[in-house]
Image 1 (cartoon, rainbow, N blue to C red):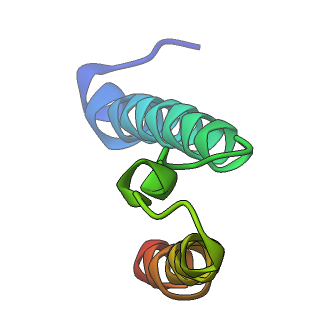
Image 2 (image 1 turned 180 degrees about the vertical axis):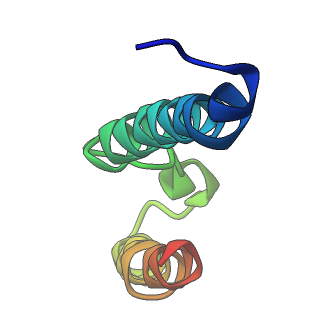
Length: 81
């Protein structure tokens, strides 16, 4: 069986391009899910802004924790998906 130039353009070239595209896409998906599997997706250390040493400091720390995990993280998850 002889593969002619027309057969190469019609069959082999689209097949090779599809394989290359699938490989690139699968590498992207693998790296993306590896990134999402991290414990801390983004490292926000909002405790560094807590200068209070009293009960007010504890309330402020709860506020910063809520801000990070109830507002910022769901926003990023919504944008990614």
